[in-house]
Image (cartoon, rainbow, N blue to C red; front, side, top):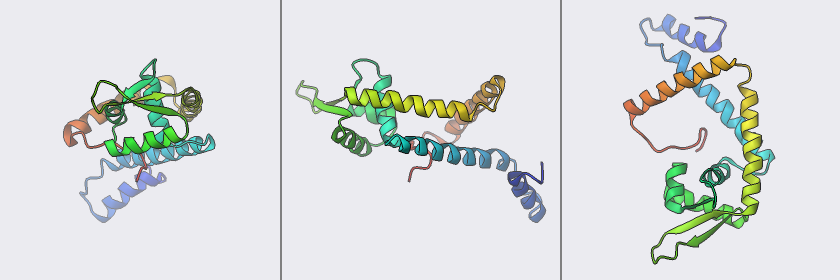
Length: 177
């Protein structure tokens, strides 16, 4: 450990003050939390510059990735965005007011409602995806391709293990209240 590294210093300080304290996770977990916070804040900044937010990007992205005709039921949207039915209803309401999506009943006598990306919503999601993913590519450009591949695989393994150990709690965006 490097005492000049602030995160390593946390672990070293605990070891000094409480010998035997399990500090193995500090170097990983604290760095992941700090990286997630920085990345989440940067994503929100980029989206705010474009007049959007993470919830809007999430909703529009799920519809866009669904493929033509860019339409899903409210239930499918809730499942794919990993938020509650109430949260997806609020997101859809805001996007509908902004002309980004349209709601319509399925028409088969059920209570199923379909949500469709409008032309305006399609144009916005294309711009947002380019901005957000382009910025994220810039942010990881300091890693060599083989480092990015190795980190991706290590995070995949860690996340799978965490899901096995902790289960699948409800998902939210990093930094969401």
